[in-house]
Image (cartoon, rainbow, N blue to C red; front, side):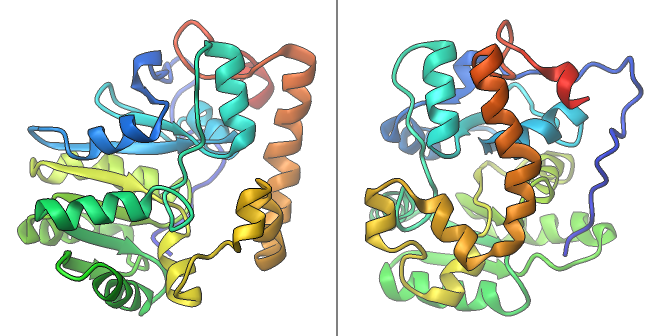
Length: 268
């Protein structure tokens, strides 16, 4: 894969970790879609907040910028955000059971161009073929897997910028995808919406249709189906999600936003 990220913070203890502001949160589907197609002068990132990425944010592996946007990943985090910040907040999955169909359809209608980085060798090409079949007229101008040496990241970003996409999907898993996305602005000023999307590319290339069966989506049990399909994620559930749930019960919503941070001493 792209590279392995240690859990030890790369920063010195007195280096502050920037917390996102509350206005960086995209709460509704319409907010997300409007952000994708907004005018911009350079690359801008949206990343997903869950107990796993929260731990990496606090460890300094994910360095969020003022221009980034944040989205709730899963019902657990959406409920915590609603409880802690107030107001409606939805889990906005970027896959075919969520926002991907809406965004791809509007991209096709607007003539926007898509680039994709992620998945295992060969999966990005299959993903590209599936997108072009499902959304005729949507131009996929770049597709490459997520397996490359970290020293090649700058050259890869240069080739992406040369293809001039309007939207770039980064599907490498966290925190690799967030680190790669945040490096983009160091290598290009090309204006594009950069969307991190976890295992979307590999899941689509493997299943070709929606990864999650409709019943699991309706019952809000996507997490259970994914554990069934990918049992290696059980360790992540035990390490990050269950402790987060316990902290929420004992301490209230554990959120990283300015003025709302709680529990960072527990994560280190």
